[in-house]
Image (cartoon, rainbow, N blue to C red):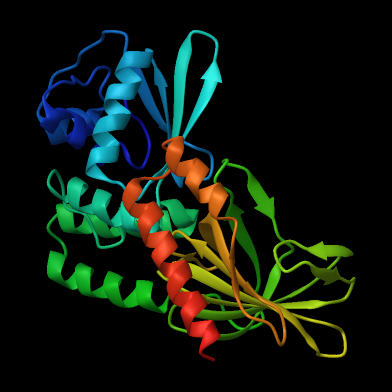
Length: 315
């Protein structure tokens, strides 16, 4: 049984594999896949998480593992967390920007799908409604697909919070925990590019940089949609640079009121008048060993870290 914004793509993946059967289908699933109602109890269920950037896959352990293996083979860009519950296997699969693009193609094999379908459906209620309306107009023959495709491509590239907007930064760790960063203020933007300032509201030590964190410091964050890292520079109240932090992550997603990415553990840091360092490699290595990330994502993250390190050494 599958429900939610990813259900059409994931049902298509399962049925194409030939080892799965859809039970308790919705009316739209019956129509799209030309199947009749099957009322059996499901071995696995698939549902969106509350933030709609991931799915929860639950059920009989062997069936869940078989489907998750199929999904990983199809998309090695996703991040996977296994959770322990009594008598039931539960897996959370978080989709990166690249994952959503792949799922768009899978969905388009079954029904008309606008570019950036899953990106928009997961981004906000307003974007989700816009997608549903556009696809309905095409399905009803009122608008040509090519026209809608062009409009969506253009609008997504322009989708960037306005200057002066306060936005949230959704920073998820490799253990699945959401880190609450203080909201930022957009001080500069260009299509998909942002410069955000945050005021530091606590004292202590900046992790990785190992320099004092002081109440009233300023963090200036540079973000580009689709870029696999973020850049943050920390300044004291008198404007002195305290350090630079390059966070390797899944390709950054930029919406109208927030940005979102999954921190891949490994980072590059540089303190003033010092050589850069690659840090927290063990966190990424552990995630690879536990199957949280794929071998390809591990290699790409390490490659990005090395390139940033070399670039900073030469600057």
